[in-house]
Amino acid sequence: MEMTLAIDCGGSGIKASVLDAAGTQHAARIRIPTPYPMSPDLFLHTIGQLAAWLPPANRVTVGIPGMIRHGVVIWTNHYTTTAGPHTVVDPTLRAEWFGFDAQQAISEQLALPTLVLNDAEVHGAGSITGVGFELAVTLGTGFGCAFFDGGRLAPHLEFAHATLRKGRSFDHYIGDHERRRIGTDRWSRRVVKVVAELRPVFHWDRLTIGGGNGKRIRPDDVADLGSDVVTVPNDAGIVGGVRAWSLAR
Image (cartoon, rainbow, N blue to C red; front, side, top):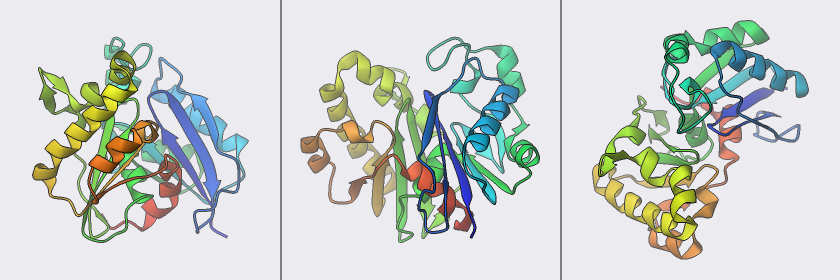
């Protein structure tokens, strides 16, 4: 039976489990706090620890926040900081992460076929229907997004860093730091506004919203999002570890 080690790397936590081909978890999901400052070497050590704590697998899927191209890290915002999101960027860490071939490094470390994608892309793989144009959004430490056309994964865009309000990006406007500052109710209304502003840009057939804060959108606000918008559980980032291998790219 083919088993997939799925690892969902976030700004505040890293989650992992092992799943069969049907997406059934064969071990309770593990979550550990994201260690900072995190160099690529510490990242690999953390991945190795998670793999050792879980049942054996035949392949690995890892979702990393940032711009990931063909398994190579072009840019990652959280992991280049001294102490996590919204702290000072360390130039040495930034240089170490730029061009880091995470896919090859993990594959060599675990001696397993490995797929590394942006974390929102893996999450989207676990939540899309494969029909029409679908946008997958994750609300967690920041704002993540991935695009799919007929189940085909489109090239990644770091739309989270587009300017939205008074020089603030989507990441800042509806990220977790801002939710804590203004309160969940007001933040929830902001999510509705952001969806309304994204709609004429993308004209999606279906939008999914997940991530750790997806569940924090108020029920009344969920109803205002529209019938073409669906909230999905955060475990899509783990389940997507299986489906990501069958995505056309």
